[in-house]
Length: 218
Length: 335
Ligand SMILES: Nc1ncnc2c1ncn2[C@@H]1O[C@H](COP(=O)(O)OP(=O)(O)OP(=O)(O)O)[C@@H](O)[C@H]1O
Ligand SMILES: [Mg+2]
Image (cartoon, rainbow over all chains, first blue to last red; front, side, top):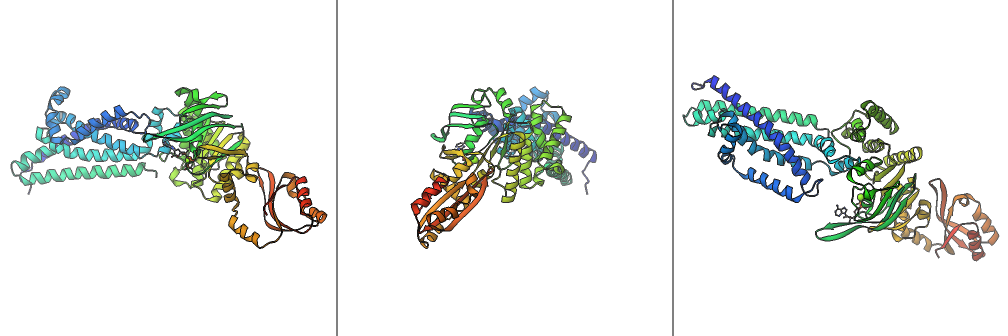
């Protein structure tokens, strides 16, 4: 059993995966959340309704989302080098990961905000709130459970993306699985990495669900 | 307090114009409870939401407490809205905030009151609506009536002069409706708040309103003091609303009438006359005999009234009629 498994390598690869995951998740939320709010606000019959802005944002988001991640990884290489100075390793993986996940997350945020009862926005407006106050004091607090669920789904999607990022030499568990498990037929390495990825997804889901329940007051 | 000068509102839907409110002029006096009644889609909400410009008018002028609302710039409009509280059919409380935080919200948004003062004000408001023990609960943990009380406390937080109520009791059971209406009446009396309320139940109008306007197809078809509109409805829509409220069964009545002989009258008595010993005296003086077919005595906003349907036989009918009219009784000859 586990004859080929170098546990130290596994440990390093796990660290790489976690770094890629949380690094890209951070930027995904930082970029995707405002983008989602903007998509919502400029959407049809919303507070800052604006056909042109909504149309352009929507198109960009759809294009990025319809591109298979593996293609995005390769297409992004020049931009990644420009941003991080390398297309390799954890640093090289984060820009394509964010580019792949942020549009997806923005759409989920937009949907979560649409779930907020119109009456609540109206009541807040009737109190004399500005658009900025409506966003911070009504929309985001009311959509918090939905946004947390969106972060969970996005994080899990990012786990599978990090595995693919192994292809362009990003390191991590996926890279290990491909190099040893697949190319050298070391099935035991494959099994260990897959089990670790599974555990990671499971933990993310459980924590996410707990947070959603904690913040749902319905 | 609130004046509409030829205000109208049209919506454009699929290239077609829908006139939600036809050019309307209206005046609500300071300190009164003004009711707006109409069927679904009549334009009630549209009219109400024009007052604090949640809806932009397509034309006309709206003046509230001397301020030309239609001319306000965004910043001024936000300041103005703080002087107008609003409550809703579905309460529209923030589910993510506690009762206390919901009530504090308008004050925090205004950003003019220090936190300690806000806490004190919230406690005072919750006491007024009888929810002091529920301050730390979330809206989902409250009953409908309690949620509306939170809505009222929130609407009163900034000390507004006007309270707008959009079907505030439509989602509540009759008993809770009565309690909420009583609270509104109390607020109107004690704080001198001007209240505009929308409903599709004449009973709500009768219980709390001073004046009422009946709206249909985007136009006000009848308005006046509640007692007058109630006792002498003119427009068919108003007549139907009143009949609903009084639970008058027209067909049943007509059937009953077929079995009695003589003339049939409807008498409407109001104020002092209501309790005067009229019928016996007039019957003796004119020799007519009467039987009571239906009747109701009640009060609207402190004014007693009675409505009787009588059958008269024998004696001098014309004299009886004259004497009733002379005694300030409104008489309609039904047969
Ligand atoms: N945002 C809108 N866009 C298009 N049409 C609208 C809009 N809001 C209202 N209307 C139309 O305007 C008319 C009046 O609507 P309003 O909401 O004022 O009626 P209401 O009397 O409040 O009815 P209800 O008792 O059902 O609340 C209706 O025909 C409605 O379809
Ligand atoms: Mg309405």
